[in-house]
Length: 349
Image (spheres, rainbow, N blue to C red):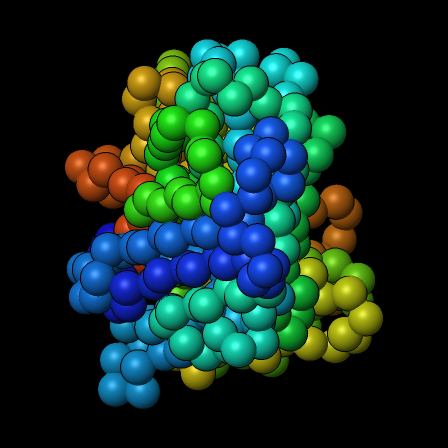
């Protein structure tokens, strides 16, 4: 049975201001100028909306309800460019400005980013409009000028917290265009989610609760197309064009038990038996369909022999569209019916 998680999002506003107080208007606007950014997300509550890599809290009365707050050190990126959107990566003046959420915003729903200094606009044409995108900087890759989504790369650690389980959630503003500034560069926009969340609940039968995984091994959750026609996933996001870079024919993310000998699956789950994974969302214009995907599991337990392989567990509800910024659940039964020490994984009905 598929179900949506209800997640509370508080309104988040960013104010990115200059620490230069003596000359706020900077007479030469082709050089370093003060930068002020104001961004906001939709106000809470937003049913079934996703979450960023921030500090997460569960509602004690309802483990399927999450609250999102900023965490100091969260990474952000400003992409500033001129010209056509399609060629933004090739424009020599394109500027990538990185910043982080300060300690003063830790645990808050509003981040006041002060003492940010200035931004150098000398590489831009002052007679041409500026364009920009502000996005999560976690996963940003300078070589590709894209956000790495972590497909098959970012296995969660045994001891992952909720925010690190969802480290690959991606959000960004749409492309905004403004006149070249006469003084301080003041920009704003609404952050929008580009990814979704899959909440996997493991129902572990008594016979399987004591089964231990192999040291330095792990358990992977995979998504594969139920039909190969037109179903592909994602490896990297172009945050300006909102398109996939290097499409993949599968999606995987896992839990790593590196250095934890003799650990059971139940010991890496929360009190309600959950693990959370950032997943792609449907984007038919970009050729991506997650709805109806096969859910697969690859696990290596102490009693396993040979090389572990992905096995089909079940299919995500083909009638439920996987939307950006929403969270979906999938229940998996874990049993050991033949007592061989190697669990079976099946979709819970």
